[in-house]
Length: 332
Image 1 (cartoon, helix red, strand yellow):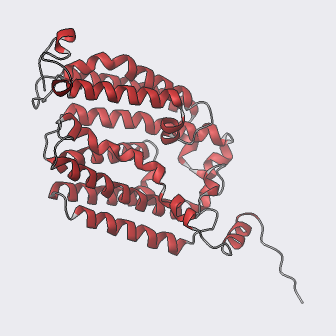
Image 2 (cartoon, rainbow, N blue to C red):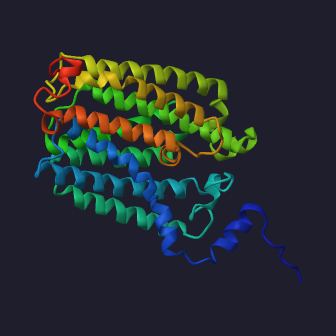
């Protein structure tokens, strides 16, 4: 009689994991609610258009935010299914419920379908522009998980485009025109953060062989190349931010956006600190850096507060507002 040897390696993980019943916490981990902070980008256009205080516009933007949270979670579930084998070789991602086997493939796919359907239901109450952008976002997310994430450079470009789609959806939700330079700001900033995410992965994994097993593109994303890409994308992000604040040829802005120029030190500090933290090997990506590094979080909150004061100064400050200090008139 032949005795069957016990499973080893990855197969052992799968065999043991299938006997573990998924908990509510596992399903919460699957949808990654901590990543929903990325969808705050949908508020950028409405905020620049001074629509956030509107009794009609704010519910529409909030519903758009919810729709994108649901769509993003559907994408994460699909991504975890596709990457379950590679994730088992990552020091942190190996604990994800699908990679660890606590949630089966069929259950994860079913969850993705339910979340995508719920996102579609939310979109019913939104404008046709939001519906189209949301559909494109969902399709792009699926294609990214299946193939585009394996294309060097293109993978980060797609991630940045996902944020652009979020920003566009927010503007469509309240029917406000969005400056092309604002879209460029979102794209270039997210491009910088996307390359930062790849840098975090390389530093955290350490070994080149393990990096290739986790994500094949990491072999071609050498530290020197990523340092160069981070430098270039950071420079472009700063330039597009300045062009957005100083451009007066596009759609007229309802506030003195040229005064945002004076927040440049905070912008540069945030970019430089982010680049520094990608080298630490402590964080898995931009979301962890933003939420867990106190200095980074404080910088973002301070910039947002200053931007809101500049945008809503006519409601918050006496006649003349910050114009008495900085001068200038409302520009596009």
